[in-house]
Image 1 (cartoon, rainbow, N blue to C red):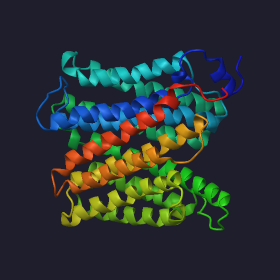
Image 2 (spheres, helix red, strand yellow; image 1 turned 60 degrees about the horizontal axis):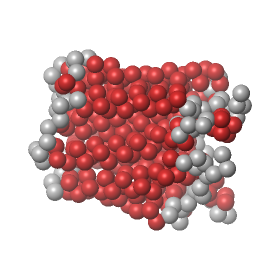
Image 3 (cartoon, helix red, strand yellow; image 1 turned 30 degrees about the vertical axis):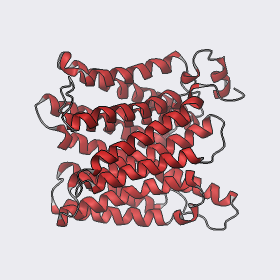
Image 4 (spheres, rainbow, N blue to C red; image 1 turned 180 degrees about the vertical axis):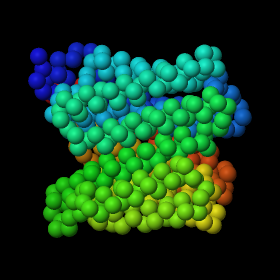
Length: 395
């Protein structure tokens, strides 16, 4: 009986892909980010039509938010929870079965017109429900009550997905509905909560190693908790009343609070460490998106879709790539340094986020943004795929 994570991984004699949770979900989550964009760009041009019950824009939004991000969340949680609880990770055929459930959800949503009405939502929602049950079991067994907040966010994220499906089944336009806003808001809160732990912690470790006397503010102090509580209230208002002037004022206030929070983490001192600086840069999209949406409500400066994409393409896209690259390096036995390929990946996803925001004024930038998105995630698959598919050295 394996008693440590390393022993359990060595005991698994199947494909290395299923020796740890981050491997299949990071690799194929990134591959899906590429494939879904390759499908979306010709759909946007009217060249192809999918056999999906979602309209084209809603399919695109759903597969980014609940398809791609759902995979990355699974990879992160299945890797982090064993560290939080001290229990063994899921490996082997159980992990393969969970991964197959995610794949089934992608296929079911893609061809949902060919299925009975309720089948695609049931298959798609089965994955986060099973994942949530597994995380709950581990938290209870490990008595790790501190991280129940992360499970709560996963539950809300799943409810948002269910609401998105319900809107589509009712004949609505879920790409602009409360289900999407609730999913985006929950993702932003995940970045605020989890990023608020790891970014200052990683920054402190690097500053100590670099011999610099400066230190970031410790994570989750009173000010951090205030920022998070205000963010919950403002994001809930945005979900329910997205066009209200009070919501716009709240978003501006939220953005300023997150800027003040991040300034306490010494981001300017990390420029020489791309693997760390990218985490700070990704977090910066949280206040940028809030400010852009708030100012758009007040003065129509950017357009709601462009402003919202500072959260979707920017905060979510950049932060997930930053976490995937760092975790993949560390858990496959490689040095925590960003080589040229990794820096190129970061530059491409930054470019995608900036051009998508600028597309409100220059429509042609939307296509360029999509191409840079493809380059970023295809770059991850090419640069990190070999390490994710082979055993960790010495394992």
